[in-house]
Length: 304
Image 1 (cartoon, rainbow, N blue to C red):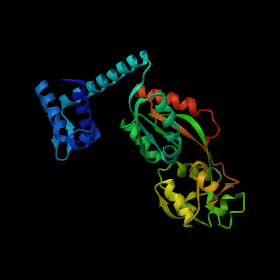
Image 2 (image 1 turned 90 degrees about the vertical axis):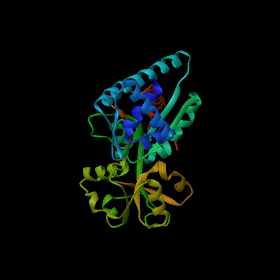
Image 3 (image 1 turned 45 degrees about the vertical axis):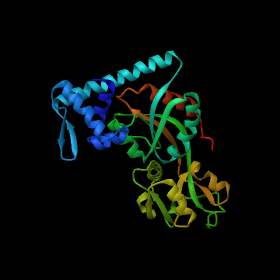
Image 4 (image 1 turned 30 degrees about the horizontal axis):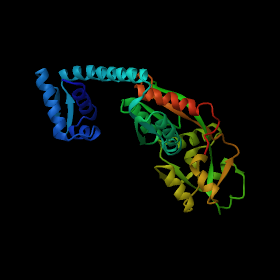
């Protein structure tokens, strides 16, 4: 039995599948199966039950899984302690980001972070705010940056950076000469919405409700799954929408789009560093969290 076999075993349990585990850890399925077989021979009992397409741990497998997670975590801490003593941080870092953070905030951090810690490899996963939070809750991801507060009791969030949202219209829209509109004016215009799990949509809906407006009354022709799609919809005159000024900065600078304030809504929001309250961060994730905090926290706006 070795650490690598335990990592393979925990991956199979986490993924509930040999094939998914093999893809996650970049090994062939026969190799994964061979390592599991060796573990079962070592302990002299079955560790996994194959129930159709799903793999679940046996009672012995559940015991081994619990200890494996502790052993792997302790191994990571040992590696970190030695690397820190030698002045090095190394390992793999998986970060989750909702649309704006994954498009604008996290990429701005990755460059200087990898320059300072060249032995860290980074994977960035993009989803809406709800998706990223669910992955952190499930333990599939340690750290994320999202644009809305979570009501989950197990989620820990720390403010990183402020964001400003504005109404975005095509440059030739009848309102393009204005600096601002009122919220009630939006209800007569075709509106491009985001999916329900979007941090942007949650912030817009909350701002409207706080001022006595019903966001469900917007003339939403279509809901789109990401900010880029909404921008293209606005450019092609399918409707207007409220978006982060980070996302449309280039289009405003080139004169293709115009941003307007909504005078009776507070559209300022924050992006939050998001982790699991009850799980200890790995050394690499902890280092990135501290790095991101130093770079972004207490800044009124992210530079674009």
